[in-house]
Length: 298
Image (cartoon, rainbow, N blue to C red; front, side, top):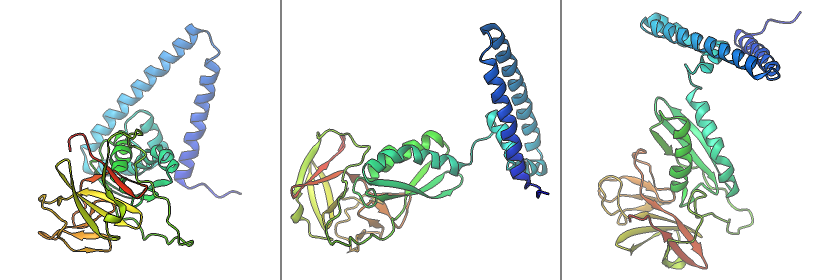
């Protein structure tokens, strides 16, 4: 004799069975003439609208009682109840599931460039932490990838998310062959044309694991180099806008000399207050030359 299924599994199986029955009936109705199929569709829509309104009023009444509201929240974890309420648009998928779907939508483009993104944490009610990996981790254009690709996708499916934070990436892997790994310096979400790039300096003008400050079109820019990888940020602390080039630099982390805010120069991430970030600019290294693309309003 088979052991009884757990309640949640049984509920999910029941829901799948009934949904299958409905799908089979709808398939039969597709062969009907237009008049009869239209009558069935109208009856189905009316019943769904009636049920949805009844559920909506029931939920509203239950929410007014704290004890009943707690039981209602527990009941929604039943797959059968959740599935029916979701069908009527009365509940949403868990935020974490919707964030994962949003990330799946941008992954094909990221992977074409050798990169990826992973969900680190969801902090209810409105904050998501992600980590750029592969060619996207440590890429100077990761900020543009985050804002133009990842954030936009997340907010399209999860409008309640107000903050998408990029957290520190794990330690870099050492290249066993000792050679230089290929790095993509331009976000896959950036414009594909070559317009807008401006020469900033020669690669060897930037000391390895050190910084160089250059002014371009009235903008004071800070360049950081690690081997053949170069990142560029506006030379202004995200706290009060003071220049940060005079601060202490250690292992790619620059400390603002005025108020001690610390920044990871490869990503612009603020390690002191994650809610703020340096303004980053796309960088391209070619033939020993470093070019940067500034925004239209820079």
